[in-house]
Image (cartoon, one colour):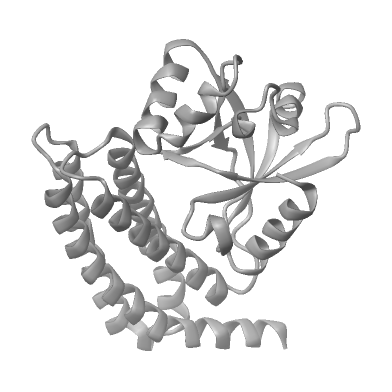
Length: 280
């Protein structure tokens, strides 16, 4: 993509918590920052990605060009990269996936979007697949209330994407779509575990009056976990199809949306008050 177009996407991505319009509206995007192999300068590139559990996969297609993109050459020289996903900014290790694993992951991408096969058909090079593994990092920028809303909105957006993919997938359930669902389940479980073990006890000690609210939120976490367990089971089953999974996603979405709305209504004003008190 032209450099000025890239810069427009990067600016919009950072201003809107990972959301962009135009040709990439509704796409899963991240910003990948590499160190220039020749210049040593930091270079940021917007890329589409595929969920893969604790990893994110990016594909060095360069729209089927005859040479690898610059970001790929950069991470070959230095695999320590920075990833922005719209919520978190973190350091990651970039690993070029090779051999049978590369072929399997690329086939999975093609099954989800035949455009990847079109890019491969345009070039004699084997288009690389790169796995990005997070190395940890600071919490989201901004206040705790802003961070909570960003995280919740990311889950909301992912549910919308998965529902759209299910509706468009036909009767079968592709491998990448299964992985998308399972990755969502993993992320929600992790988020609720952190809240139960960290944020809720922290709030409870400082605001005892929140005890009934936090008790309700914890009980809702139990309900959501049951729904996640059911979704995992349906997605992993040999006889699962898109309609079956869609029904479970709709059930999860209804309960989760109500839970997230209630949590934000109850906790964001408290978090804002605490932030104001800390800064005064």
